[in-house]
Length: 275
Figure 1 (cartoon, rainbow, N blue to C red):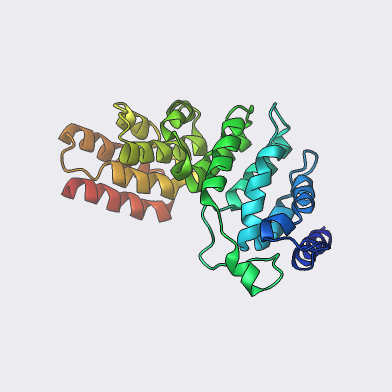
Figure 2 (tube, helix red, strand yellow; figure 1 turned 90 degrees about the vertical axis):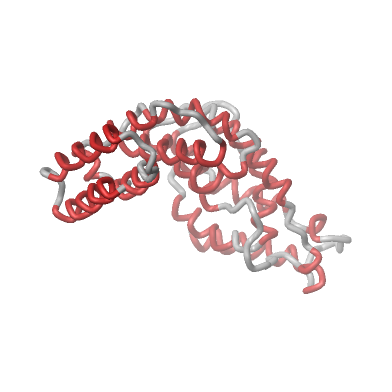
C-alpha cells in the first residue's frame, strides 16, 4: 500500500515537473485529477487507512500538495451520513493538514526554481474550503469514537479558522454532558470560547467540579483536565467557598488516586490554598 501511494505521488510530481503541454503557471499544469484520485482512495469508506494518511502526511510539507488537497477536499466530502470508517479516515486526514502555508516553502510539482518561487499559497482559499467542509462534518451522525476525534481536530486545527466559531457553542455544551474524554475535550473548547470569544457560561465551574471522578485517572486526557482546571481556578477573585469545594474534592480523590497522580493533586491543592 505504501509503495502504491509513493508511486502515485511520484507520478504526480513528474507530471507536474514535465507536463505534456507547457502551461503559463503551476496551477494550470498541476495534475489535479490524479491528486484527487489519490485522496479518494485515502478516504475509503470500507477500510481504515490511517497508515496511508500517515504516509500522505509526508507530502503535505509541500505547499502545492497541501493547497490543492484543500481545494479538492470539498468535492470529496460526503453530504449525507457516511460510514464511521469514512468519517474517521476523513477526520484523521483533516487533522494532518495545516490551514496556513508551511514554515519552509517547498513545491513538489514545478518545472524549475522560477516556477516554484512563483507559486503562492492562497490561505483565503484553504480557509474557505475548511469552513465549507466543516459545516458538512457537523451534520454527520457521529459514534463516540468519531465524536472524540471530531473534537480533537476542532481544537487542534479548525477552531481558530472558523468564520463563526460561536456556532460551535451548542455542540461543545452538548459534548460536555457526554462524559469521559469527550467532556474533557469539550471543556477545552469552552475555555477557548470564554477566553478568546468572550462566551458567557455561568455553570462552567459546576461542570468542571463534576469531572473530578476516580475514573479520570484511567484516561489519557487527565493531564488536560488538571491543566484546564488550573487555568479556570487561577483567578484570585473566585469565592473562597468555591475554591474550598475543589480542594476538598481533590483531597478525597487523592485517597484513591494512583501514586503518580497523588503528587500532582497535592501540588494542585497547595496552589489553590496559596491563591
